[in-house]
Amino acid sequence: MELQRRVIILTGEPPEAPGGVEHVVQELASGLRSDGFAVDVLHSQNSAPAWIAHPKTKWQSYSRDFLLSWYLGKRASAALGEDVVAVISNGPYGWRIPRMRPETRKIHFYHGTYRAQADAIRPYISNAGFLKLKWWDSMVLERLSGRGKLIVCNSDQTRDEVSRFFGFRGETVWLPLNTTHFAPMDKSSARKQLGIDERAQFGLFVGSTHPMKGFLVVRELIDRTPNLKWLLALRGGAPADLRAQSRVRLFENAPYDLLPTLYNAADFAVFPSVYEPFGYVVAEALACGTPVVSSPGGASRLFLSEPPLDFALVKPTSSAEDYSRVIGKILAEPELYRRKVIEEICPRVETLMAPANWLRRFREATGI
Image (cartoon, rainbow, N blue to C red; front, side, top):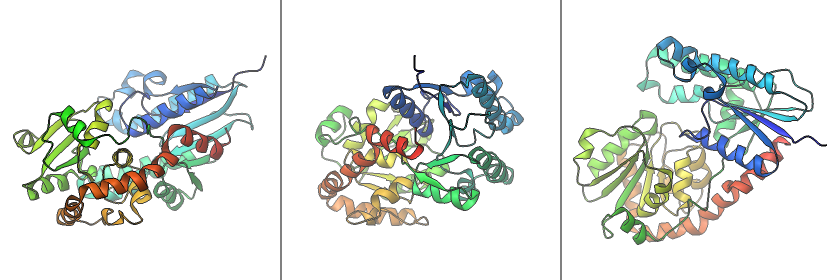
């Protein structure tokens, strides 16, 4: 009897946990299983001691990724067999890889680099944090995890970082997105579902208050736009003063099923991240037909670099005033720009990111 082909995936958190990497792993595992593969996903919850999954001290946190990668390699070694056709690692996990048959493919998926992130958020972190992120997490763990493997990346931006910092050649496969879930719907219906004013103009931010996501710019934009209402879908906590603002509607830890309604209810979405290797929220908003104003990132460079919406890709150094000017242009003709997104960008999102299209590209790039 022919053995069922098996794939082992090494990653940090369980696929069902919130986060972009986790979503990719979930989609990849699901897609491969649909294509007839058996898939083992090894992560912190099923492959390492509890203190690694939930570190309680600073030094446990500092050593976590190194030790987790060691345990993942140990589990992968025990799971290897003639039926394993590929071992896929992610980010800083995969520096310890077991001996494998030459036929077994060793693949590493980069979702950005800690070195570029460290440079981008340097003003917001300590010297020790900066050095750890840039040199230990990136130049040691991330670089070693990809050495000697077939490299795939989530964006051209990440591919260029991997080449510049690590000297590895990679191929961009982009990321999967459920374009049936994230799709245009009637704006009025979306607003009725949320119980918000159907005649007002609304801006939207989806993300967290972390400085990397540019929330300081969002705060300033709220102050600069007294005639505009805002929808804020925040992961984690929300600033107390925003709860009292009548122009702000907060959705804390908004569930996945609510996101398309939020995107469709808004006249535009703004994403001023200081570092974004891909930026799922950009692609989700555009897939819903919502005009996006964004700093440069993997998805925004991909979808907003050409007319008619290239004006909405702002410079990395842009201020809240710059964002405000771009937003004003969209709000002058919101339905025009929504139509342009639906007609010209939504088909590109479908071609590149619809799960079946993405999985086919991933399999072609990796030879699985």
